[in-house]
Image (cartoon, helix red, strand yellow):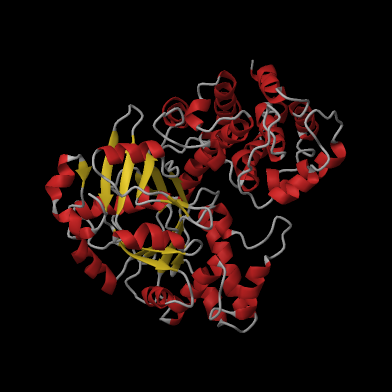
Length: 538
């Protein structure tokens, strides 16, 4: 079991004896079927795709409900293709870490082709030909929230996007620009129908994808770089779908404990590599067992038969919206962000360990049950309280899940508006609720700025996770040191009034002064973070 290649799967007994589940279909036959008439392209070759989406299609192939595999395309970090896909014939070992300590090991063979979105490569020609094929039903995406942004936090179009606007579909460089160019090829091939499905954790993800793609189509049409009918094609609901979705499965980077377990039973091909762009990849992925994918059923060219796959539900947009808001705005993502911020400040390196901390456990319980749950609308297909119960008592405390606050702290500035701002807006709208009752969500905002200082609660410097607004926030806080006494209003007001970051102007919402006070308490000196948490969560 030295190298994960198709030929070594021929010795099935060797794998089965070690407890591995293998594809129950002919991988080469599926690849042949797919090559001539592909139905599914997925953009974003990362862990959530390999551990969830690819496994869903594998289940359908195993059950004989599908005959085609998935073509995966990567547009940000090409090394993922070179180091985690092609050397292993696009196979992947998916390791499911169950909370009671057992693991499931599945060799996933549903990915039949891996391509780089490089317009100068043969891969790009192949992608164009796929998009020109009438058989294509769905292009799905897991490219992270920021992948859909074409404007800065100030509302200015990014220079690299403006360059694509000016160059037209023949010379694109940005991620969404490349997607728009592929859609232009599909338009030129006869306005062929398709559904573009964002599966990223951001509110109304289908609309965000639509708006980004349409911006390119409209600009190219305005500048006579594409026919006006191209923009009309993108807007035509009967031709192009942009369904909303909610996806939920925690897939942390490859973990050393998992590597040790795999090596113990003979699986040697476990090297984890960090790419030049900071992506951690390996021939395997590790993930939790819990998974949900709720999708608006809007597919003009049909869709894969995955409705019976574990955790998958197709429904109407209103239900997707309720489920997404329940998860992203209340029942999971805000809890993760709160633990990430304070976990880094308190020196934690595992999310599961944080749940053994009295104050941190109370932190997420108050945010979820007391402050968040009152504004959650029951979607009917998943019970909100049961969802939080599972998150707090099973999922986050899972000691076999090697997730870190440092990973989750990535891009926090892009997450606060959705994960907390929507709850504040709901409180402001509801006559039966008072925003003054929100005490701990504002504490997370103050904690985030305290985190941006890059100094832990003991006064030691630590590495900050990547964030597009990091430099700007550090500049705004320049001059503030641990142990300083406020007031800091002159530095904090421009930040806390920025509705692009927090979803609302915190001062207009009646929370600005409270967050200022919290921040002053958090920077009072070494140990102030712990002391503040004890004060408000005691």
